[in-house]
Image: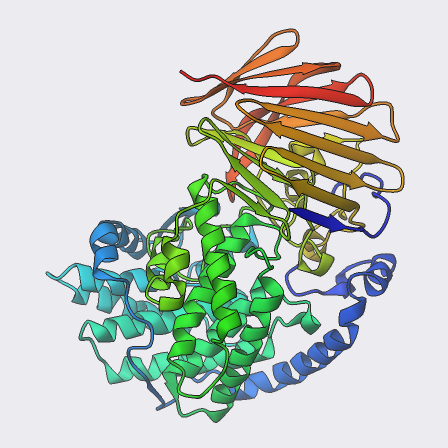
Length: 605
């Protein structure tokens, strides 16, 4: 199957290097390029949304906070707890996460520990603040009350105390915890699901119910004012907004405005599943990790949509077909070790086993919906193509190789894409040998952010040190754009793959033959030579010879051979998880001419 994109412009000259599009943080020239380029179809919508948001924000302070000041009530049994089978398998891990969270231990996103009310000044990257803002651990507290039968009240009391502390320390609508509507939406889902699960365990407190209901109202009005629709150029952030509004609509009685917003959200999320889930089942975010995030949001939204107190047509045949494809695609990714493409953000709508991403609870929930059961249980294919996303997976007995040549995603914005066209990854015996570098930081280090997404850090060809798409120096909004995407096309069969990346000045053609070994042929045009980059996993040791190198890890070994190139090993840093940087090495093959052939031969021991 084949994917083709005609591109936009020349590969830009090399350049090193926010959420909702804020063009005014950019220079005039860049704003103009965006307005006549990828943003042009959305200009009218963006103007509309900006005006709408300004009006809503002006009114917001007159409407919130409701927390502690409302007598609205909450519905029950909207979000069901995980199955007993899931709880039996994972209950100990749920309780372990709950205990660590109760002590304020985070140990993720570069954060060692944090309690509600603590300062954010020591948190290096805003992503860490926003992850904390989602309050995932409240759901773990609620499940722990179902698991630990001896003293479940300890978890209810901890949840109650934290909710009190939250609305006192972070009143809506100001502050970091209310600044991004996606995280507000995910948090209100966590809040209401946790409260529901405690109710299902037999706990009820009228005072706490009023506070939770008021907080839910606060969340709804803040999401409404800060809606991340972006004029139609919406991404996973908007899905998080919609999940929050739908959850509020399903739980809260007594506010017609929020109920109307939930009705609109049902219609909107139905449109979003068509625009954000590609025909091959992958997300349009150009990131495998963000595909996982989007699937989780959609699964959770499905449950809430089923429990809405109003009629809607969101869960139609197209919804189930798209979501089924997306779930099956996620199962395929996990079956081959979750190969990393693009940013490796591990966000989820629900986390109950820890701060790292885990999809077992998501699959447990999805399997309860009869239209999704086949996607959750069908045999996994060994050789799969996602041509719309731009990834081919070849699983042999000895190894798995992926080939990537696809769009920057997000309507050309490329907020979570890397310069990885014509790149590969390779794993053997569950060990990553040739890798994507991941993404260590966003705002924590704009320089590292852009190094991680540079063509120089991916297993593809670098021509004249030019980026495939270029990005701007600095932080803020510059962290979320890629410019001048080149033309590309790719096609894969059972044993062969071919990708082409082309600008007005340069062209790279890569062909891969896949048998017991892998033969890769790289041809560059418009220059006498180039460099082929082969970043290695951090567990891989290298022994260099004249025209070959032995790469040996803890469970795997391959021999890499080449002709017509000079080889060297250079130190690099990769990010196997966000905010985690480990030292590794890359093999650099400098081509003597315009063509290079190299082979990868697994060693079976």
